Amino acid sequence: MKNVFKSLIAAVVVLASVVPALAVSESAVLFLQISPGARAAGMGEAFVALADDATAVYYNPAGLGFQRGKEITLMHTNWLPQLGTDLFYEFGAYRHHFENIGTIGINVTYLNLGTQSRTDESGPDPIGEFSSNEFAVSLTYGTQLSEKWAVGLGARFIQSNLSPFGAGSEEGDGRASAFGFDLATLYKVSSRLSLGANLSNMGPKITYIDAAQADPLPTNLRVGLAAHAINNKYNKLTFVADVNKTMVKRYSDGTSDPFYKAIFTSPWFEEKKTVTESDTTSQNVFKGIISGGAEYWYNDLFALRAGYYWDEDGKVDYFSLGAGIAYNLYRFDFSYVSADEGHPLANTMRFSLSIGF
Image (cartoon, rainbow, N blue to C red; front, side, top):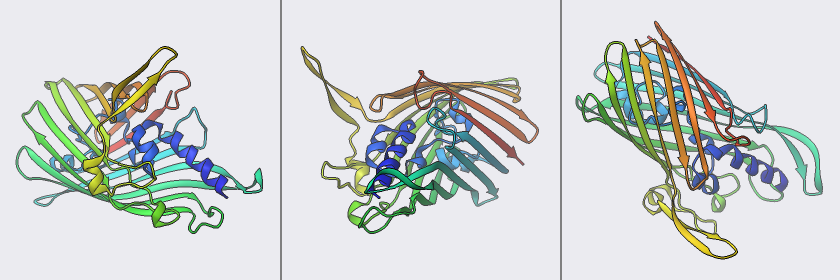
């Protein structure tokens, strides 16, 4: 049965190629770092300081504090189309403002990992099949503390169903659950500039087999800014930029720091050596992601977006493009990843529908 876990772990690692490389090797439930919303995806996934729609439940719950009314957002994408046709990701969010209380958001995230072949220790020949998936249900809250400043909180239940079978004689199986929470803030420096930060997925480790082999959640720090360069009746142009860092610290013996310690011990840079026939060089590599983008709206009806995503440590970089159409209560958004041929994210498309009322 160990072959089952080996194949699943390999699949999850590949599926998470969009998230920080540190998370890929050192944490579990990586689907929590797949960015929802075609609008933000079209801007290189930089959205923490904008966070002005229902996807704020993911990017920055504090953004809910500045929002009024109600909104529903739904998103679908065939995840990593280069790898298979049965992988897909779903996201749904709802936010509701209560006067003198704040804005509450609810969202569900679901990742279908497809059908896996079941094997045993006698050989690689399949003896059956099973389905794998992961999902999370979150409750978020944002409120204004002043005209310019808002804070937000989030809590989520996480369920991972990698395999219904155990690994040999070990206890447990490929199913586990956990809880996580978020702390966020958003500050509007002026009508043209805002700053945001979100520390998400803090919580106890998730256990598949036993406590000694528990894996940390992908605790993540996201900070950024949004600048409104043009903001008039017919034209709106906004630039956004984020820095995204997974706050996980795992040691060579397989142990890892609890989240409240890893926030301070997780390294921001790591020395990496390159060995050639004639020389050995080293450089400090930033263990995070830098992304940025722009959004242009004409008459609040049509939008065009572009962005860039750069992860030096994970050797992942790509351009993204997006568009949006808004009419009455409805907004439809689309994004597309333009990456080199063979890249797992190449040709990934996201579709979102938002309804505000």
